[in-house]
Each structure stands twice: as structure tokens, then as C-alpha cells.
Image 1 (cartoon, rainbow, N blue to C red):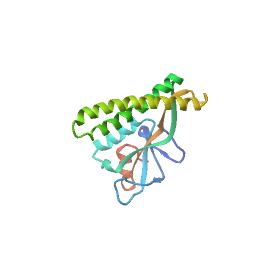
Image 2: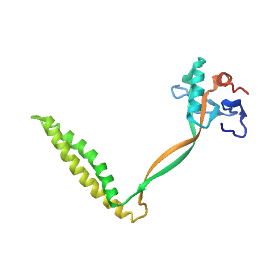
Image 3: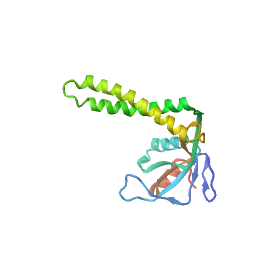
Image 4: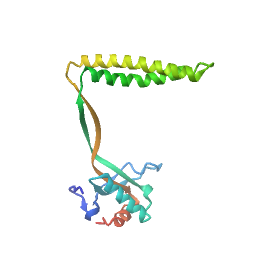
Length: 179
């Protein structure tokens, strides 16, 4: 559970916030104010809180789980060299090559299936070759500045359960988080 100054702590389920939050319910034409009724360190805990509200017949369409304090994480997956750069470029070029070849093959009125498959194969080969060449050129132009492969993801630090202001007190009481 995450504690914040100015908030009223509310037991083991989360915290009750003093300040309303907006933009309000996404399905409502008039965006009503919303209030944070609990904050959790994991999405699963926030999900359990909303599930508990649902089990207690609370109108859960007035509830949202919001990830706060986004963190960017770049996980390095390996060293990048010329063969890997060529392979990555080939895969990146092969996929659009197949799709473009297949689409052009469907325009043959005599035998669209055979022509589509044949042009898809040609598109795969040509796209892979062009992609590999482009991948190697881009890698060479970087001059060793970024010779590693990675995957970038974003992750929130905490998850807040927010509800429409009109029913916030009821939801907080149901979660056992009343002030």
C-alpha cells in the first residue's frame, strides 16, 4: 500500500484521498468529478478491490483503475552486430513484402490463389533482402553508438481506484476504507 501526505489512511485496503480527481466517467457525456478511494502497489490488488465492490452490488461502471507515476524500463536483450542487424532488418522487411505481394496477387482474375501465393513468396524474399540491406546500413551509420538490442516498456508505480464523486463515500465504506 502506498501512503501519501495529506491523505487519510484507510486500513489495509488502500487510502482515501482528500482531493477530487477529474476528468470523470469516460462513458458519461458530462464528465463528473472523481475521487481516489484507494491506492495499491499492484494491479492485482486494485483488481481485487473492484471485484469486491462488484460482489457487493456497487455500480462498477462508475469505477476506474488508473496507473500512476509511469516508469520507462528498457530491457537490453543482447548485443547487436552486423548479422543480427541484417536478421532484424530481414524480418522487418519480409512481413510487409508478403502482404504486398499477396494483395497484388489477388488482382489476377484468372487464378488469384496461385498468383497470390506466388507473389507473396516473391514479396517475402524481396522484402527480406531489402530489409536486411537497410538494417545493415542503419547499423553501420550508427557507428557503434547503440550496438545492443532492447525492448522498452512502461509500468506504473501504483494503481488508484477512482469512482465518481457522488458515490465515493459509499464505495469507500464498502471497501472498509471510510475515514
